[in-house]
Length: 303
Ligand code: SF4
Image (cartoon, rainbow, N blue to C red; front, side):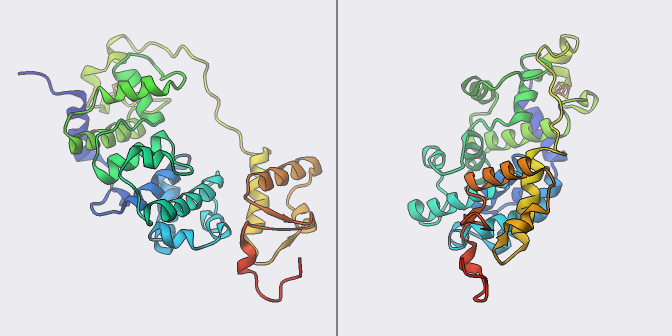
């Protein structure tokens, strides 16, 4: 009798160990899956959970989000980080309304043509919302495949076509089984085959893992330092945006000057927020979130 495939072993493990996450529940809309994938790209599950629920209860579909100004998307995004994702998600909602009558297409090319939807997100939506067979390759899957199949300690630099081929080769032919295997690989990479300390003793792939079989060779690439946040422009941008999110009125430059004492860094952070379309400047003295004036009370100062 032939050995079960890596996908079969991973899927069996997933059936018993997968986290109970709301975007995995049967009947969840493709829009809800898309929102979860965008939120999860740079933010841990525990922080995404409340934000995902709040977002979908306010905007259950693309049409509802597209009807609100970008300012509202940025407000709802709150402190999830990397707030350009909020803008892109709203741009995506607008495009879904204009091109697909407010539905999420079940087609790779149509998805890839949407604002903010890249290789990973498009394939994740097709696999997890529509049960299609596509290699879904995030950082965790790249690392898992590099170790279990190629015997390397780390995945090395991204080589998109090669990553897609290496993962697709592991998927079963049947679409629903392939979609489940994709979810299983992601979960194993996130929970067991972690970047710094893989838990090989708990791993269902251990008996077949090329990295273990070759004596756990050390990584060959440069080690990655954790990203610093304190004192960076990212922190200053976050502080400036927090003031604007919390205000329903236009905010004066003087008020924004209070959030960070370094004039040069503060000005640079504000300029990049304007450049990114996350903040609108009104004559260099007043600032709002983009499109916020539609929600400005009638007694707001004239601009
Ligand atoms: S045995 Fe260890 S290194 Fe290999 S796939 Fe599992 S967790 Fe990763």
